[in-house]
Length: 449
Ligand SMILES: *Cc1c(COP(=O)(O)O)cnc(C)c1O
Image 1 (tube, rainbow, N blue to C red):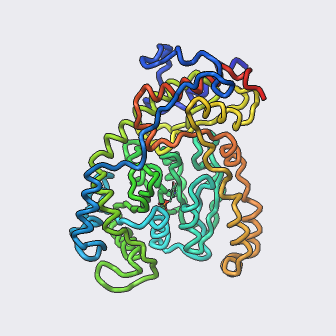
Image 2: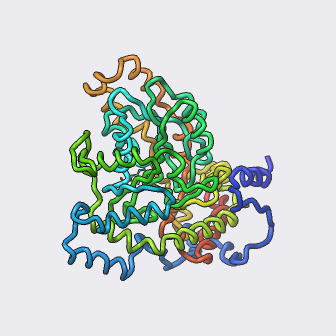
Image 3: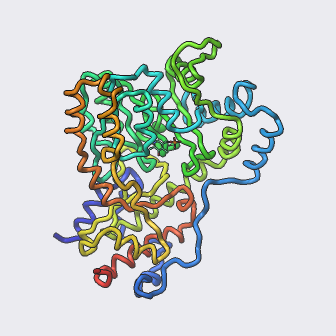
């Protein structure tokens, strides 16, 4: 098969609406063709990128520092001390930014997700369908409610939930679908929402990586019943540890508030089961001071991602994440690609990553194994609590249906850039990334080990 044709077809398959649809053969304005030549650094040549750092993350400036000092001196450190403190103010501003009516801030993304699971009345005996390719916090939110996380397999090219497999895994005990917008780019929400409606299931969007990403003109996290965000240090809006729930349903969002406030409602009555998951005022101070630059950084990551994707389109060894039709903007928390060993003399991914790192460009294998392969599975299948709540037949079937071969493939093929900081760099830095990949690709015969 002609690899060039394959490349073009892959490019078409991965094209987002505007980003890479152009098939222009023009040499990109910033292309630095001189750098590509030469011996790989791993064999003693000159690295493409030397003694150059990347924009650091998380972001801070004097505004952030001043905000923390101001909160310290105010002695308002907890949200219940003031209706106009940093937490309620952040909730208002974040909801406005996302275009929703309500936001409830929490201590983490995991707490946000768990709060939604509880607020929807999901508990022992219930099942929630989600992805095996995600942060452990996603399933922790389901397990904390003693519900069963049912893991559906992935679309190998988008790394997102495969809607057809979601459909197959629905049982009479399914109570919700929790799509995860991996890398910060939207899932196939049209198909997922269609399935959810058909089965009358609420949708909890795990948008913990996907701040401000947009799909079919809607901000991610506003398509399902509720959307959950993380503000953990690495995320594109960060305060160390923090989270938030957004939504338009007055009753459900009121319940989320009650649940996250140890079951105590805004009316002051302790009404339901709930942990204490309140965000503190220092975290919100950091977030508030950071919000003004968020859109600009988001636009910059998107522009750099589109440029990088354009530069990579004729280098078949890595193929950027497939974006679904209707993706108008991604969050680009991570810039992810699939490593194609068939275009690298069938060499192990480690050989490629090592040669690339020597050029001064580090891509990561990211998640080592899907959550279906982690020991928590044995833990719950052998736990007296789960044995009490689920029939032996269901638990046997659960184990049988665990395999997620596409997720396994994704774990083996992933080559991604931690993007929160690096995608804020200049176009010349994006050229370094593409030049390094191209150089290693062109020298693949020398690197046969
Ligand atoms: C970070 C993350 C979480 C958990 O958020 P925390 O704030 O770390 O608890 C959940 N899901 C995904 C996809 C994440 O990336």
